[in-house]
Length: 196
Length: 356
Image 1 (cartoon, rainbow over the protein chains, first blue to last red):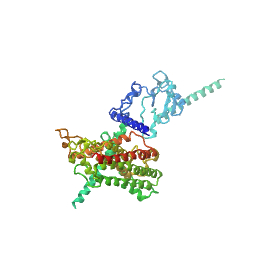
Image 2 (image 1 turned 90 degrees about the vertical axis):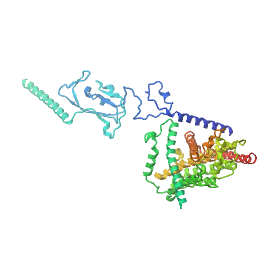
Image 3 (image 1 turned 90 degrees about the horizontal axis):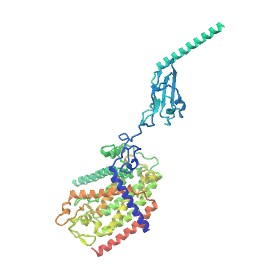
């Protein structure tokens, strides 16, 4: 009884001393050090540990792998990213162009318009597969991670800004071209048949 | 008729003090707990979060008073006020400075001890009235705990009273300083009646009163239901014990009572053991430090400072020690504190007869 009492008193004072030390160490605020820093973990044991988020932020790597971003000028609308996505969060609608419509920065010819290029960030699981398969490296992950929105719809990022009328126009032009080609083909076949 | 006016004014003043103390006590508690746990605590409302509890109380006032349909409505509604009023009435007999006491009672100490016990009744009313098993369990634990710990606290107090030979708190306070006029002996041998200061405090009048103070302090923690004796509220088992069902102002009153109780037991401890409103500075030769720092204003300053220090220690203990189990709690009370307190009482008797 006396022994356990002595141990109890000793541990009580030990604990009180420990908390007192923390109470007086609280003047020191958390240092906003990157996780790469050598004293990242030792810094946390001195003073308070709270990161007051919007006003204080831990530095993230410049090449972060957080939100997706698409550089539409470089996109050839090949649909590979949409196909590989495990959660089907990328929705692409392509319109074939009547001719080559330009070149990407790495020299690939663009032959498709993107009528729609939506990425649903609410579904995205940040696996990064889309960035791997992209032939022109136009879809990348950025170091932006803080995206809170008021409505769920706003989490669907629309990267293609083609207006519906223009898309309809392009679709009509392509259909006309196809029809013309078809007509020309038929005419040629008829000619051949007649000729023989 | 004028004295009625004075009474009401004094009562309002005490209520105001209790409310302001509770507001800033809660703020201090949140900050202390945060710093001990390496957090920051409230920072956003006002400078350093100082207006946080005011915002909280405004929120509580706006809230609906929900009375559970199966509750015993009269007991349920009345309980928080009985809990608060019993603590609040205790303040009536506490002296604040030489000649400054709301009610100069000959049996002040006895009165405080009696009126504060009524809190147990209020807690039982709250627990029973809520018709909630957590509340009832919490209330029964609380009553068992408060009644048990009144015994060592009572014996510790009696050992002081045997030395001072009075139940009048103002007289007990006067005895511990330069204003007493009679001789007072430091540890029973050195006469410090003229020197006063920390040397004349009751805790140093007899060495066993240091033990009595420790017992009283531990028992006072239990009586105000504070950690490590907070099994009546035990969040991890009982949601929040007897005040589980309370909302809005009822909840606010329970909290007000808890913080008033903290200050009350600290102030009573200061009056009985730590020299009440007397200065800790003794007269040393020609430097009459004790005489300079004794007076009405000084008295209020000293007693509030000492009480706040004890409240600080209560908070410090709360955020350090884990909660007792029910059997450990009773063990400590009946097998350790009560025999020790009885021993203190015995020594006090012997001390009084042979050494004073």
